[in-house]
Image (cartoon, rainbow, N blue to C red):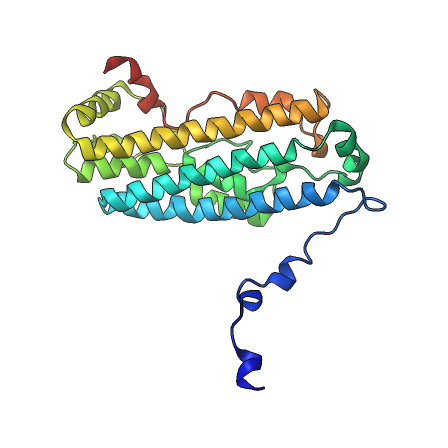
Length: 263
């Protein structure tokens, strides 16, 4: 093989040829809009992979007490969530008739089966038995590993402790497999952080940005599904809009929201 044959190129580095073979519509023809549907959802999976990468990095940064790198990473996470929201705009260019032209081909597949999004939820602190029971054994094992470790919020509390804010041991050493419960004692500490530690307060506000961005993405997702299929059952047997609506307005960092009216 010559030197030119082995040289790294844009195409080989990004595996472009392999990537472009991964879109395989199932409909007859195929239906024009199925390619858009596939590309949007494959892109979501890539962004979920990046979110997992970034959240784990910011947890390490938190626990090292590195404020500025943590803030940079949090800003990136928020921006990725904005991109996820903007992709809904593209998907909504597809009308209900266009979606239903190939929907029957999706069989039992559903976004509800996205193992990576369940990992993202676990990193943000979701802890419940319904989160992964419908996934493969391998996917359940990956999520279980995340569930057994501190969530992003747990790491944030460790960051505050490193910064000199005395977080009680019961929060730093809690059972991470259980859902975090908002706590007035933590809320008092957060108020003190905002008044006395601008650097840590800035980091807390970036967490609020992310929480708001996640809720915005959920809302846009719900409205997109309602606009496209109304209140039909979702593919894969989910309740569609009913299930998605139940996920709205549940902040992942509730203590940060609880203090909004006390500044």
